[in-house]
Image (cartoon, rainbow, N blue to C red; front, side, top):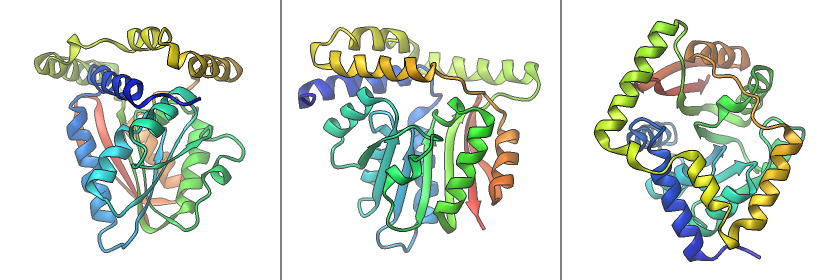
Length: 254
């Protein structure tokens, strides 16, 4: 049994507010990602986009609004967030339940042509470095020449003192914007677990996380990501936007 439209709307809207606590200038970051995708897909009649770690469809919905002719495939391992996205943002994307980096995850996408762009926000840092490199290699193979991977995330600096500064600047920006008053990550999940419509999905989510042992990723610097991307076959890598420790990193396939 699926989730009702009303329930999905409530929890997606609360998710959007909750995420503002953590993603510095989140809406601007989404806009920058869409700017890049618009640029690399210019002239393509039906661009194919892949949203990695899509959650409840936040980025996919914005891309669908910006690029209405695009076909978007959105993948995530979280059954609860996927169901919220399928219900609330049903027309934005084709949602796929798969674990990025696991055997068979590429086949699960059922892509019928090369990708024009792959995008992600605050998701790829969960992957251990060997899995991340393997994922980058897969994406380089899936993208057409001139296609791009666009990754918006929090990237620490190589020096702890510098990381302290970027985190502090981002936190102060969030405070000025009033984002810190919204419910936090833990509160969102705790309250979602009490919603009768989400109980079964929450149980499935907990089982999956238990089997996988939770998140085991590494927070790598942008420079380390760039190095891995070049090893994977992306010859052009650059940061196009930054505020605090939040950046948009773009890798273009040559």
